[in-house]
Picture 1 (cartoon, helix red, strand yellow):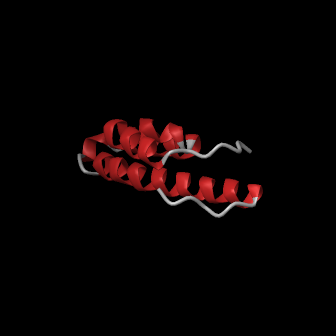
Picture 2 (spheres, one colour):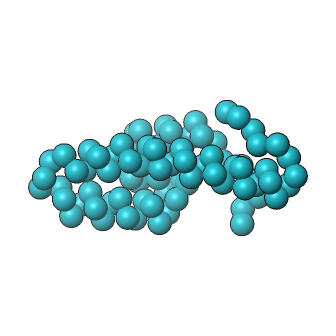
Length: 81
């Protein structure tokens, strides 16, 4: 496990700007899943935009959970940013 914390701001900027591609910063598996869903449903029009929004939420949630795990392993209180 990577014991360095990740930035929630960086995650938010990447996912807002690049959608599922920006999710690679926090969750490679999640990024691949949302990219496949978005590409396979591009004809519907709305689902790729739902994937974009989901990537923003998923990125923040994953980074927050990662930072809490790192803090617990290092015996520190979790940082709030």
